[in-house]
Length: 385
Image (cartoon, rainbow, N blue to C red; front, side, top):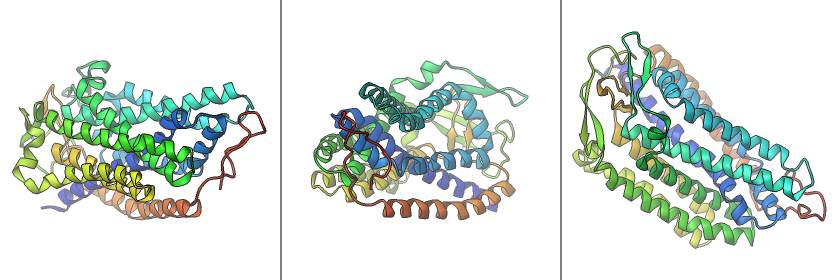
């Protein structure tokens, strides 16, 4: 195995770590946004809920930046093609996420219940939509995307927006993502708040994890009846050009389960994901939300690991021309670039982990309830601890 191939494998693992971290950290914040209007029944309660994530949500967006940066630098062919193929989705995601800082920033600028209600629902949209798109995008790439390359290397899209984003399997994946976000958001609210918010978060979070587990198992049976992709001829150290070196791939019913059938030990990966979902709910039922939140780590790494294992070595297969599918072998950067990115990651990731851990440690404890958003004063998000 050459150094170049080893680097590709390392970055495949790192990409999975970054995607799981996005789901865990960003999903937690967005889950709170989704739950905001259902758990917070008064202006004061909704202000208290937002106070629980106010010190962290901007820092957690770092994982989005790291994920996008890793794809840009380590998988340039994948970046260029996927951002073009999913252009409408990316725009939808971008605009929904722009609403998020606006919601936090403008919500308390006018002392009006109606004004706050508008921004509270804006925060719901900017929580639900990105997490649904996040999950649906994974469903899309598992099924394959309709595109091919011309002899000049330009991509051509062969399917419309509605068919690639809103097909039934992708919707299922989107709902799993939303359910996990709700579970994570409910867990952090239980950690940071007291009754009645605590009790209502428990009421939403426990079933959300169990629903996610059921949907995840349903998805496992579903992929056995859809066509996946199998690489029949590949060169692991090929350059990042899907038009060169004669890569050959075919579509085959149930191919997404072939790695698991060939190596039964790999079933442990989806089992870890399901175990994480169930344990999180059980710990929340037992009023141990901190342990439940940490089980979310198992959940997201199990889910993303399952997708990566099922698709390996494909990153974004093409059902229009499977031979031009983007794989781990033909969609990475050069060996030199991967080494440089690995050095940058070795410096950056520990800093991000350390900062994240430090910020949660400093801001530990229950938030102080907000008072005044119902008209008795001037509620504010700042200075919550």
